[in-house]
Image (cartoon, rainbow, N blue to C red; front, side, top):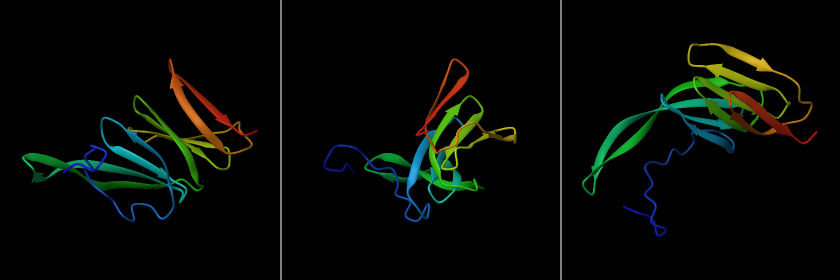
Length: 125
């Protein structure tokens, strides 16, 4: 069923995070959410119930990472997920299990993008 605006809601996840979700990334392996609660979560899609002749997609929690600080933004490129934190740090995670902390900002990281293999980030400093 469609909402009044014509968009179909696939699933609601009440309580997915304990604070505001700051960013959502769709990667080939999962849907990632990052929040002001300091958590990065990975959600795996699975087939749900048939509704109005179409099979819905539901998300199941797959992974939870404590970022150690509120996440303000997130970017995804190739096998990497980057989380911009309130402290000014950027946490980087690869699908192969690498976990890096990038430094350089002295204030919260509020925006990021990857362009031609380079991570570009911005903050209020």
